[in-house]
Length: 130
View 1: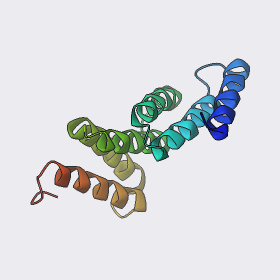
View 2 (view 1 turned 45 degrees about the horizontal axis):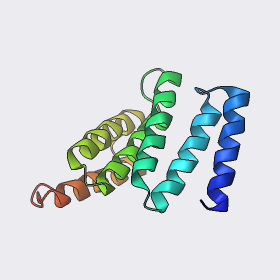
View 3 (view 1 turned 180 degrees about the vertical axis):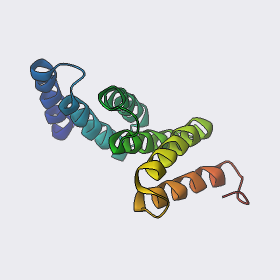
View 4 (view 1 turned 90 degrees about the horizontal axis):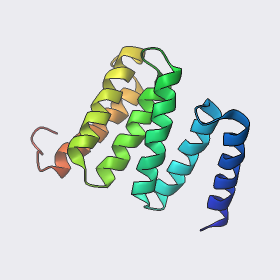
């Protein structure tokens, strides 16, 4: 375990005590830890963190939310890296649709998700569709 991970985990432990499991600050800290796991290639742990984050973001927001859409994108990307293409595509499509409703068709987040979905299709051998 790296020093950075120890600090993330200790900060998360304290935040959980102070705020409780379902607080946005706890979710944000879990998201940061998930990002660290993702960058280290620890994809199962990243997916676990991203799912927890998404659960809190969904419960904290009514309807469409940029936080939920971003969480879907992070989870979809981690699932893609695990080779779970169908599950990844579902999350990416959901995030894409949410960002489109929030920002319109000509937004950088929408473009980024289109690129991510294209990568999934290519990985599935569906190059013509990508």
